[in-house]
Length: 473
Image (cartoon, rainbow, N blue to C red):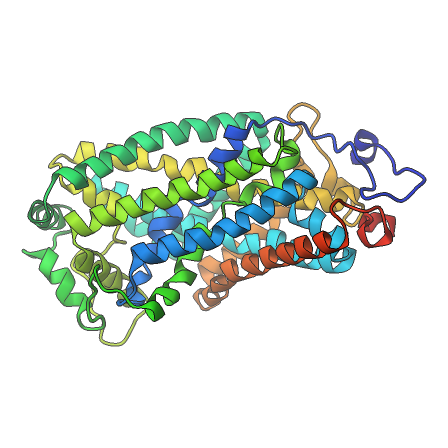
């Protein structure tokens, strides 16, 4: 099907073995911006990454966020120029294979965009549990449901839910997915405005009283759970001050920030399906705005957390939760046995469980609008390699109506199911998932090297042997 849909190779070797991919330019620049915005998601990735910042208690998070945003801007500029020069489906694979060589480019891009994304499926599932299922279940009094998702079977079921949802939204096609992510975008922003409003207009003493009330009501915690959380963390955590600044600890924070701020270029593999991608300003502003709108929001939320929740309490809650979960020696169980979710904390300020549940549901759209990023970008990399005839031609097969590369999607789903089962039932395997960010960072570095190499040889792609399609060789 793929061969008949996309044509055959010409007689003369060219930069691309075949030009008409069969995919359509279904996205606008705004769609690309929203995708970039979701890729550096403040709520899902941001809060999850920030929950580990307690490991660097002397680090100044606000300064580190600004530094990382500045550094990532250079990555945005590089990717925007590559997109404008070669707006091709497959992104990193297309650029690396043409400049660095077919073999090296294939290994580097596929390791990052294909094999490593298997590891992200359980990460997405864990985020869904700690930011949606667990807080919602506890708020509604469904303790059994919350407990189920902490079991091995519950962990695997959460992975299946994520894989099913992502598979459905990807198969709906680019146009439909764009509508889904925009609906989630606008409603999610409204929910964030409510969260920020609560944190802005209530005081820290209000939050302490609200936390103590809900800790007892929802979790059966003893009185003064706010101080109890700090005391529990103090067994293995020395506390943290928001105003502390030192250059060394600031640098140590950057790897945690990479977990959520390194991805404004996540849609680079999709720009072959974005209208006007050859105009430099369009890919640049879609990625740049996605990054810096998020940086601004993160800065605002961090300041509000410090003001109302209390920075030392927030980091103590994170330390108490993770140190107990990781069985750190001397770490007792926290009074509130749930991941410290700032959205849930903000909801505590309103003494109404229905309101709290609705807030969690609305903010859950930050997950569901973002979830498609798990497979959408990767399917285009696999499709591009199959289109070059490096992978079997069926991997480049696309549906006639929605133009979805379903062959590539299958190659993402099946291995992810296996990895998810291993993750759920073999806890000793979880350390491998620490490499999920590092491998992708190396993939991006390889693309930067390819950009430098391409700039040195020519101001535009050459149809020389060094830049031919791997399938031509």
